[in-house]
Length: 155
Image 1 (cartoon, helix red, strand yellow):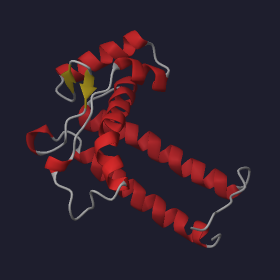
Image 2 (image 1 turned 135 degrees about the horizontal axis):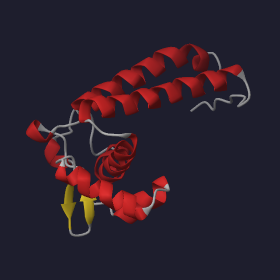
Image 3 (image 1 turned 180 degrees about the vertical axis):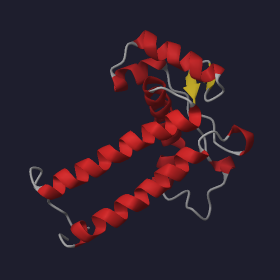
C-alpha cells in the first residue's frame, strides 16, 4: 500500500476538508428531511447506529467473513450500547442522551434491551434508513470521483 502524504496546510487538504464537511452537512439534512430529526437526535442516532452495527457488521467484513456476495441479514448481529458510551463519545450530557434515546425508541427508530439500546437491522418494514444509505453510497462515489485525480497523482 502506497502512503500518500498531503500537506495539511495546502490546497488539497483544504479541498478535502471542504468536501467532507459539505457531505456531513448534507447528511444531517437527509436525517432531518427523511426521519424528521433535529441535529441532536441525528447525532445520538448516528452514534448508536455506528457502534451498534460496528461490532457485527464492520468487524465481520474486516475479518473477511462477510462480503457483498455472502452477506445475508441473518449474519448481522447488532449489539446494545448504553447511554454512557454515547454521552462520552459525543460530549453531551448523559441526561440529554438518555432522553433522546427514549424518544428515538418511542419513534421506533431504535430498540431497547436490558443492557442498552441497539439499532435494528434495517430490512423490510423496519428499514427506516434506506434514504440515508442511498445518500452515503452516493456521497462515497462523489468523493471518490472528486478526489481520485488528486490522490492518484500523488501515489
